[in-house]
Length: 509
Image 1 (cartoon, rainbow, N blue to C red):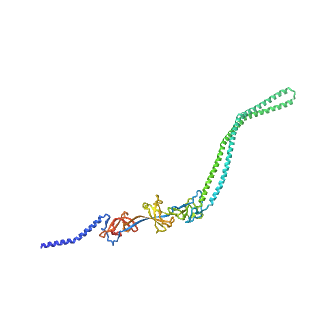
Image 2: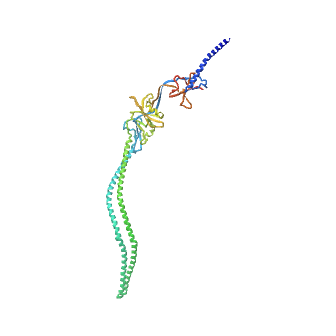
Image 3: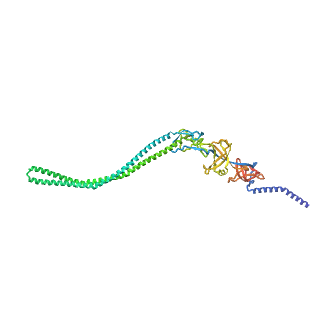
């Protein structure tokens, strides 16, 4: 009895072990899966706390050829284009009579537009008149100079004579005239004294004689009175002689001496000054001639400049080609509108102002704008295609030949592109737009996903991730390395295999 009970218990225990075995295997399998998930450093288990999701949609990892094109805008340019301006040297009035014709085919030497020449021609006639007057003045001054030089020689000799005469005359006055004047004043007084003395003596003698003779008293009295009167007159004359002597010696002779001395010094100074002035006048005349020559030279230079300006105002084309109203800057055409007010009839242009361009049209290249962020890759990838703005389906082989070292505007550089044009193909017009297309990245067998299925971390946009389904069909967050974006798809460089089941949308947690 006991033996049967023991056997029965053993059977129950074995049956229990067999029924529990599948559950143990399933637990072991799930344990391995969870373990593998935790071992993958690029994946995160998000099964805990996962809400019930609706049907999870997945997208396929597609292997495809990808190509990234860089399109740079630019303009066609004629490298032989010649900007035109009226480069006058001295004439500033440039009035338009007949405006230029935009797009006109011109030959070298053809008139591009007509300028009013009346005022400059009038100015040239006035200069001719002024030059004729200056020539006459120059001739007159030359003759006068020759005459004055000869006269100056004569006058210098005359000055020598006058200086000598002035010196001798003054010396004669000091040595002869002045002493004589003083002596003469004293002598006149002495003469009056002697005359008076003679009359007084004569009167005394008459008185003695009349006292001794028999003449009548009446006759005596008459003679004596007459003689006495004569004596009185001589006394008065003597008194006047004394006064005249004092006056001459104290006033007249010193005054005459001063006058003579001043006159001598004046003449001496005048003669000395004339010796300086006469040659100076000759020098002045020479300077006047030189001044006339300089004025003449200046007028001739002005005339020469105006004659050149007159020829410049005829506005002859410097080359053969098509006429463009406006200018080109790095291939970009300015347009004609900004010049319309100046180029209408009666409009005024400024000297050296570029307002036309003549394009021969034999060679065409492109000028493209390169953002500084693309400067390095453009310097490595020179070959590309040019797509004309007028024929977007036409693609021409092209190559960058030069990138300017300095930016042409903030963050923009300029590049020159040479183009291979097929034979017999008409060249595009300068100033028309174009696009330079260059392949910056290409991969034949790249893994790609839709852009909307790749997500970025909020705290760092450089970290990207996706959601994949694990073997239990549960979403797992997996970090990936992305590459280029092409349209609606993005390249995956690392983090998944092409068999991965990638969720289309971010699962709800």
